[in-house]
Every structure is written in structure tokens, then in C-alpha cells.
Amino acid sequence: MKKDGLIQALLLQSGYNATLVTLGAMALGMAMGAVGAFLFLRRRSLVPDAMAHATLPGVGIAFLVMVALGGEGRFLPGLLLGAGLSALLGLWVLQSLVRGTRLPEDAAIGIVLSTFYGAGIVLLTYIQGLGAGRQAGLEGFLLGSTAGMLREDVLLIAWGGALVIAALVALRRLLVMVAFDPGYAQVMGVRPAWVDAALMVLVLAVVLLGIRVVGAILVVALLITPAVAARMWTDRVGIMAVVAAGIGGAAGYGGAVLSAALPGVPTGPMIVMLAFAAFVLSAIFAPRRGVIGRWRQGRAL
Amino acid sequence: MTALSIDTLSVRYGAVTVVEQVSADFPAGAMTAIVGPNGAGKSSLLKAALGVVPKAGGHALFFGKPLAQVRAKVAYMPQRASVDWDFPIRVIDVVLMGMQRELGLLRPVRAADRAWAMECLARVGLTEFAKRQIGALSGGQQQRVFLARALAQRASLYLLDEPFAGVDAKTEAAIVSVLQALRDEGAAVVAVHHDLASVPLWFDRVVLLNRHVIAAGAVSEVFTPEALRETYGGALPPVLAV
Image (cartoon, rainbow over all chains, first blue to last red; front, side, top):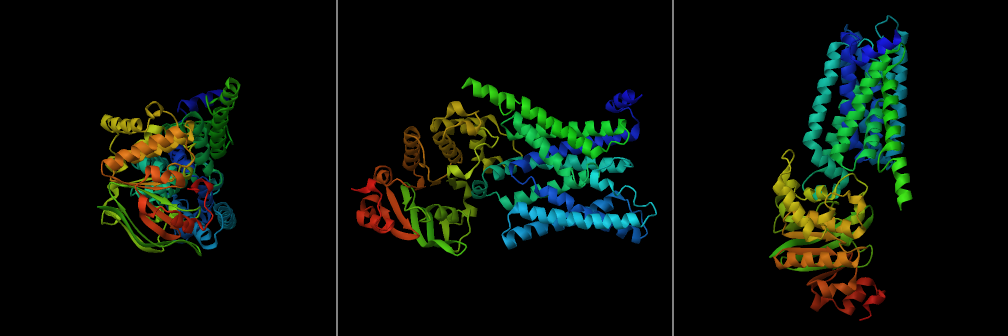
């Protein structure tokens, strides 16, 4: 019975809703993998972790505002708007800390991440105490949940992911140039600060699309893990971004399928574990940068 | 014609002034060396002129205009140590970066672009390395990749930051002959340089710099032991016991 359920889910035959969720998770994984490749090369991989944790207070506040206005508190676009504003605030605080206090970025990330996360938990716990059942699903923003996702939610993720990938294609040369050699890029008339800002907008977009599915705590994994796994296989940025998108998409697809087929298994952690499995396989088997490849090169010398 | 004119340029990092009120002209059709001791502000002078680091005062004009109006004519070769050579990119793709202003955002790289990039690689003797990842090259070869990228731009002014730092003899000869060919075609070549002995051999002009300009002009006129002693504060490297 269970096995049949898994095969059905794999073949996208577990029903209309499960199929939509699976496709949405796949689109999300692809977009996050592709953005993550460029973020990794720019050495900013931890910034989205602060950004994602900083979404939580915004989710709580947006819920309270929408309920106070007499609306449906779980309206996803409204929650995402709150999450986005809150993440931007977090990003602003992060940059102010780095510029204003000369704090190294990793320390500033630690402060922003934990403080916003704490505020988010306080708010979400308070909302849970309100009872009334209208808050059901908000805890999905912590660890991700595809239960109760609507068709519109999935379409939002798919279209958002497609737009992000299109933007990456358009900006790819500038992103590569600024990541490789920002000083040279500047002399060529490319403004590194603007390119970095554009990259952060794309990162924010995929984080917002991702927190509902993977959760604020784990969403950064889908940006970093497929990118580092892809880096093992190739020495070309373009191919690396495509491979990272493939790994992210496969992890999204597999994670959604497994959590649909196995009762009680949460989607986000499952997706993250699959991405990590792809990384482990890459780190072992990649021809030149993997463990086996390096061992053989060592022997050949 | 003056390719680059620097006027009372100053650079400060925090409270430290590394370049103070420097004025210098760099003519077309000449190779100019900027020399001076470590920390004399040689690289900072170039970077500030190009807007890579902020100017604390003064300005720089390229062919009589602000850089933003003539970027296509100005090629820059940064120090090799300024980038991560493990970056996942091939040699040919680094050279194609020099054509970014023609390629723009969306135009695909055409066969003609690739052929020109290959020609630039041939001029620095790296044809067979085009498809290697840049980290697989030696330091001298990496330096030549940067030179090929500058060549790909078809510029009229070449600003090079330590092009001969830590390179092998073969690379040194290759870079010199490429730069001399550019000079003979009428381009201006300006290089931050550290090896005093080779200045009279390779360069037409020299700027002696130690935070401010000590002397500037034709090598035969200003590259004197007195001026060098003043630049290096009496502690001349032994190679200069001329």
C-alpha cells in the first residue's frame, strides 16, 4: 500500500493537489539552485540565512494585521508581503551593522538572524495562543509544509521561479564578472553595488517563494547545497548554475513526493536531506574534485 | 596626445594618506613605468584614477574626458593576486570579458568574437590553454590571460598593475613584446612596476612615486641615482648600484 503510494506520487498520480505541490517544489528547487550558484561564487552564502530568519516577524505581523482587518489571516500573498518587508529590514540592519560598527559580516549575520528569529517565535507563539484555529499553517513557515497549499500558491511559486531564472539569464555576464573580479568590472562600467543589489533581490524573491515550502530555518540549504554539489562537477559557471538548478529541482521533486507518500514526513527537511545526499554523492564521485578523483590524481603523480 | 592626465589626486584609507596631490601626464605612443617603494601608493594611484577606490581629492581625465565617456578606450589589468583563481571559468571566457561592452547583456558570443579572443590569446602565447580552467595555469600564464583580456578590448590606453610581479622569464619577454607592439601602434601603456633594473631597458618614461611625485619624465632625464635615492629614502635596493 505504502509502496504503491510512493510510486503513484513519483509518477505525479497522487491526485491533482499533490501533483501541483510536487511541481511547485521542483520549480522552487530549480530557481533556488540557480540563484545559489551565483550567490556562492560571490561568497555571500550566509546572507540569505539571516534574510530567511528575518521573514518570521513579518509573517506574524502580517497575519495579525490581516485578522484585525477582518480578513483571512492565512492569505499567502499578504503573508509574503509581510515576510518580504521584514526580510528587507533585516538586510538593512545587517548592512548598517557592517558599515556602522565595522563588525565582520558573519558576526552581524549571527546577530540579525537570532534576534529576528527570536522576535518571530515570540509573535508566532502569541498567535498560537489566540486559538480560534485560524493560525493553522503558520508553523509551516518554520519548517515548511505543503499541506493546505492552494493552486494559486503553487502557481505563484512556479511563475516566480521562472521570472527569477529569466533574470539570471539576462544578468549572467554581469554576475560572473562582479563575482570574479569586481574591480575590473567597475572599470568596464559595470557597477558592482548595483549587480549585488540585483542578486539580493533575486535571493529575496526565492527565499520568499521558499519559506512556505521549505521553511525559514532550512531555506538557505537549497541555496547553498545544490551550488556546492554542482561546483564539484564542472569548472564553468554556466554549467554549474544549470547543474545546481537540476539538483535543486530533483531535491524539490523528491522531497515533495516522499512527504506526500510517507505520512507525517515534513516536506522541507526531506528536500534538504535529498539535496545533501546529492552533495555527498558529488563530493565522493565527481571526477576531478571528488574524493575518489583526487585520490586517483594523487596516485598518478 | 595625452592619454591620461592626473591632476592633484589624493587617496586616503581611513586616516592614512597613501597618495598625496599627485599630478602626472601619460602620453600616447609611450610606455611609462610608475615606480616607488612598497606602500608608495602606486596601485592606489591607478585604482583611484579608474574609480576603483574613492578619490580623496583631485581628478583624472582620459583623452581629455571623464572616464565614463571613454571607457571603451581604457583597458585595465589588475594585480593577479586580486582574484580567486579557483573560480569556475575557462581562459577563453576570461578573455571574452574584455569584450563586455560590445556583448552587453543578451547578445550571444558569435564565432567572430571567439576568433578575436583566440587571436588575443595567440598574441600572449596561450592558444592551447583556451579551454583550461584558469586555476590550472601557472602564475605567469595567469598574468598573460589578464593581458589577453585587456587586449580583447581594443583600447588606446592600457593601465597595468604590477604586470611583471612574480612571473617567469618567458612571460616577462612575452608581456614586454606585446606592450611594445601596442606602444608602436600608438597606444599609451602605463605599468606599475617594481624592478628598477628593467626600467631603462623597457620603458620610455617613468614616474617616481613615494606618496607624492618625486620626478616624472623621460627615463634618460629623470631616472637618476639622486632621484631614486630620494624616492626610496636612501635605502636603495642593491640591484641599483649603478
